[in-house]
Image (cartoon, rainbow, N blue to C red):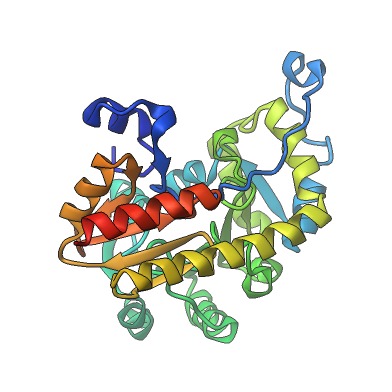
Length: 327
């Protein structure tokens, strides 16, 4: 199992600080969660049904011709490599490590490269996996660049796989609407923007040539009935979507300015997190954890990812802690 953020209970045990006393900035999950309503008892009592309106809501929200609901994009990340015979796969680095891990585990020849090197080496690969915006590297790509990359790959039977887990704050940059083109596969998560990581749900946008075998591989009832009920309503709450995008943009910018003020050299980020490369990252992570502030530590390159504080008290606490540990 690879390491991920969000291990709050483990941190609480290690540092002897009760879970409710932590400021958890270790994930990129929005702290401004969509308000979940009461779930009807029938959602718990009956098997999930595919024609409950969730797929139509997702197609409308993402602007995608075809979508498949999955038990979190992690399920699709692990299953998708099994749909191809062993081939040459290029994966963006640094990035969400599960992508390269899943392709390697399925017998593919995987090479991880920084974004520029990966795009420049497109002819060497049958599949290229990007994260847009990248986590944690923050890389962003022009739509025209991505569509040209897809055209180059698909012309020889290849795939462009784009993980858009952090795209909801900037939907105009998404490729979901273009997934009618063979060989273009886009992952979307509800955990980050809607703050519903515990729902373990996401969507894959692609042609039926990919979605049908992927569905067969994953099996029936991949998303639970209560989750389907909640997601259908969350995806159609357009007023909340607009307000959340403004709030995320403002909070993300405030976090960036706070980290800059403490001489943490700007590296990258997006509306959901800020990433700082720093040789002192392990020591800073440890010092902040001793103050009850959990960040996401990356060893290579040495860096920290900061999620969004949820409120004024969170920003004040982070500001004071950084002033202490940076001194």
